[in-house]
Image 1 (spheres, protein in one colour):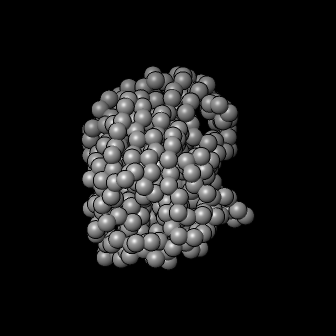
Image 2 (cartoon, rainbow, N blue to C red):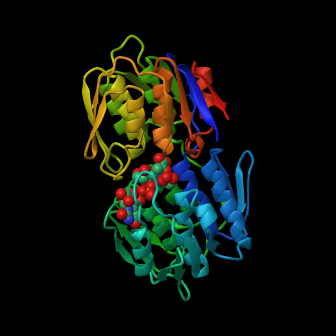
Image 3 (cartoon, rainbow, N blue to C red):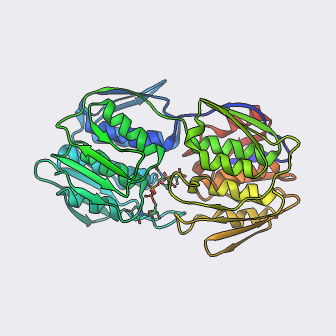
Length: 417
Ligand SMILES: CC(=O)N[C@H]1[C@@H](OP(=O)(O)OP(=O)(O)OC[C@H]2O[C@@H](n3ccc(=O)[nH]c3=O)[C@H](O)[C@@H]2O)O[C@H](CO)[C@@H](O)[C@@H]1O
Ligand SMILES: C=C(OP(=O)(O)O)C(=O)O
């Protein structure tokens, strides 16, 4: 199993190009199941989760290849089962459910199960599809959805804000008979990117980015081309790495309007943040890092996917900061690992109380999930001595060869077996 060996004590400086957004690309790749024609998607990051999705699409009978662009033709899909072996490695596989049942009247998708950050049930996905006329049973570890003919447009009020829940129902509604309204919809930029993609193939989605999305079902989608938006979480991760190491990083091919809450917190922490249409820089040189209070909430608030990185920021910043997680019930797995590096951080319910730690020390730590791994890498960069981050397959799910982007910025690190 690969690990990172990181030599601490560096200051990161320079420019980095941000990849396409994992969490936008994944639903877009699944949405290609709605079309019988060739679809070409650019700016798709080269990540483990993308490989898994393409393997799943091929398993269903589609052609799906990633070179410079991703080219998919789902016209040849001949069965509708997303098997456990693929689903267990990637929870986003649940996004096969909506498109398959909408297009073929049938979908068997393995239940994703619990994971490190929380139970993550999929009841809202199931309930919404039932309102659209699907018959759903959970049997032998699979969600089995059936409908005679087309799904029917429905009015769906989501009990809680769910990103992939909104996306699954939006994809299903794209081919339903009639109009669907999703209220209390997620407003995340990735939902907007998916809506734009569906519309690029001839779908009729409006209101994405607000909490009420209207989808007029169409009989079929066409082929087409689409470019995935930049990854706001990868961007935020590099900006925090600049702040924590006291350097300056400029992120290119990104967008400041996607992460306003994060940029505001970086400024509050004492960083000089500057931006243009497609770049953002975070300059911490000669400035004092101050701790900030952070509470994760759905977009446009502070994202849970940046929580672990800000926990590290608070640990090395002056003062005391509180990091409160309200989205997932178990997303502090990085805290005991940071404590092993000497961090003064304690958990009180769903809040991490972070106090200034003069010097983190290198240690052997375990990555438990994607963003926790990113936070441990950042901690390793600023710690005294060597840090080994184990189980970095988690980080490869969401960051495109992160070492290839960090080393040119001044990190001393290598991937070891
Ligand atoms: C692939 C992808 O885009 N992943 C993102 C997506 O995950 P994901 O879409 O899985 O997260 P959700 O927005 O669905 O989860 C929000 C909360 O709703 C709960 N819930 C969700 C669905 C459901 O049917 N029932 C239910 O109770 C979850 O357990 C969680 O407590 O949004 C999260 C919240 O921004 C991000 O951290 C993930 O990076
Ligand atoms: C939690 C995340 O992803 P996923 O929903 O795919 O587990 C993430 O991107 O931080």
